[in-house]
Image (cartoon, rainbow, N blue to C red):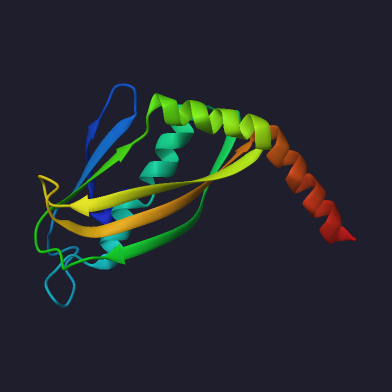
Length: 149
């Protein structure tokens, strides 16, 4: 599905902490006003923070996109770029918070910009749910019991 967003992943750091995408303007993603369709902007950004985090923190966690807000700042009539970053400190904090609370939410903000980052065309604010996998399984089991009553 990602291919249909018309975006391309152009850089991934070896440690997966940093990912960069390019959303080239083309006939495949232009809207009636000849700028990049807002849905293309969102879909170019949508999967990266969650998939990146899943691969960074390992299989002991459940990671889900919970909600999103998209803010369109100006019409995009040029190629767009976005950077997705996590730090080792952030990953440690996520794991510590989940070990204390069993489940948390974090917010990741991504900006779609021109190549040098001086013009912002869109801002995507994603809320990501993270839970201890065993806690999540138990929570789902209890929820299904409650629904069967």
